[in-house]
Length: 477
Image (cartoon, rainbow, N blue to C red):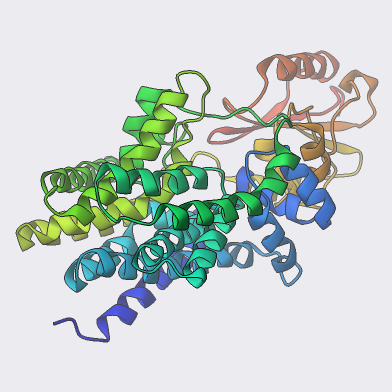
C-alpha cells in the first residue's frame, strides 16, 4: 500500500530539483535569449515573426504577458519549472490509469529525477509546456475512449490544438494515437467520434497553418536519420543532449566521472526500456510502445528526403519512455530498481556540472564586455550565439552582430543592431570582436577580421574557453 504522503512528497522533491536546477544549471543562452527578445514585441509582431520560425506562437504569447512582471533569469525560467512540476502529476495519473499504483509511483520517481525532463524544466523555452500538453492529450484520448461524450471530445480537441500551437511535433502524437490503437488492436473508439474530434482540432489549427505555410523557416540543425535514432534513445536519459551537445561528453576536459555517470545512466535506462519489449502481453504496454516508436519512424523516414530529425523535439516521448521503463522495472528485481534510481540521481548531479555549457560561459562574457566598455568602443559579435545573451546580460553596451540569414520578419522581431560599416573607416577608436568557436559564418568573419588586423594590428586576446574576445586598439595606443 502506498502512503498518501509519498506522492506529494515526490512531487515537491521534483519541484525543488527543477527550481534549483533553473538557478544553478547554465547561463541564459541563445535559444532562451531569442525567446525573450521575441516575446518583448507586441502581439502582432510576435505572431508575424513566428510564422517564419520553426516554433508556433503559444509559448511566446504566454511569455509576452509573463515578462511584464519580471525579466530576471529565474523569473523567465519559472513557468517551465511549474509546467515541469505539473507534468509529474500527469505522469502519475497516466501510469496509474494504464497499469497500477506501484508502477505509477515508480514512474513518478523516475520522472522527478529524469535529466531531460529536469533540463527542459529549467529553460526559457517551450519544451516543458509542450511535454505537459502532450501528456494531457494522451489522458484526454484515454477519456475519449472510455466515453465519447461531447465534453470529452471538446477536451481532447482543445488539448490537441494547444499542443499543436506549442510545437509542430504535436502532429506526430495526434496522428500516432489512433494508429497505435489500430496496430495493437487496443482502445477501440467509434469512427464518428474519432473523426469529429480530429475535425475540431483541424478547425482550430487551420488559421495558423494557412498563415505560416509557405513562409521560409530557419534551417534545421538536425541529425541524419540513423544518427537521430541513436541520439534520441540516449537523449531519453540525458539532459541537454542533441546533435550538437551530445558529442561534448567526449570532448575536452570533461571529467571522467561525469562521462561515466551520463553514459551509464543512458545505457541502463535503455536496457530496462528494452525489457518492456518482452512484456507485449500487456496491451497497455504494447500500445505505449507503439505510441513511442511511430513518431520516431515517421521522422526517420521523412528525414531521408527532408532533414527534420530534431532530437530535442522528441522530448514529448520522454514521459512514455519513463512509463514503460517503470512498468518493466516493476516486473524485475528490486535490486535493479534501486540501481536505476541511484544512477538517475547521479546522472542528474553530473548533468548539473554543466558538461554541455561549461565551455561557453555566456554570463562571464557579459561581465567581461562590461569591464571592457569605454567611450568610442564598438563590440561586434560574429553571430547570434553570443550577441543575444550579451544584449541580455549587458543591455547598455553598444553591440552589433554580423548579418544573419534568418527570415527578415524574425530578424526584425529581435531588433538586431547589424554591423554594416567597415572597421577601416575608423568610426570607433576600439573594436571588441566576440566569437564562439564553430558557431558563426567563417567567410564573413574572416573578411571582417582581415580588415581589423590590417587597420589595428595584433589584438589583445581574452579566452573564455570556447568564446574568444579580440580587442583591437590603435597601434599607438
